[in-house]
Length: 220
Image (tube, rainbow, N blue to C red):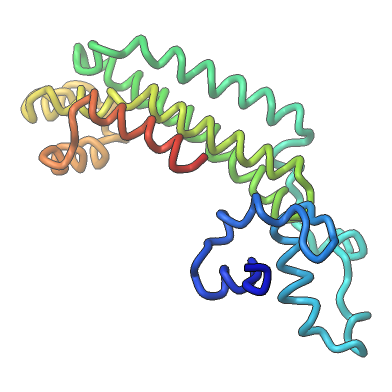
């Protein structure tokens, strides 16, 4: 029904903003680059009184001192791409622990440190891409960058999904023994003990892998 617009569907909860992304390429004869641009025209612009429109500045007109400096995260998008490649490679190499997670305290420590390295890279990449997207939601480049980061995170999660079930296949005594034996594991004491506490809620490695892969579908 052409009288029941996308705006009405979003307002009534019939469609979520994410669902409408594919439907806003053309509305009322205007081409929209993004849902944000559509929202601005449909929701924000009508509320601005003509005499006040001059008070609203484009981001390009705002003094640099009032903007965040994302160059401290990545001086260029090429460096983001470098970390994308690095995170992907680290996730591929993480398979070396499969079947050996609890073979020794040093192996467990190495695996936990690699998880930290991967998580830090992904967190930095996704944060940067999301904040660049927030600077201008009409810029499809950073919408794509953010989407790639989120997709990579899902893929990495799938590749690492065996870790927790395998960790919990060892006895509580084994894990606590590792903590006593290897003082470098002290940094992960809370994580390990909390994981042990949640043991009855953790699925098998195969089931966890299926859930991780399903996440890629639900977030596509």
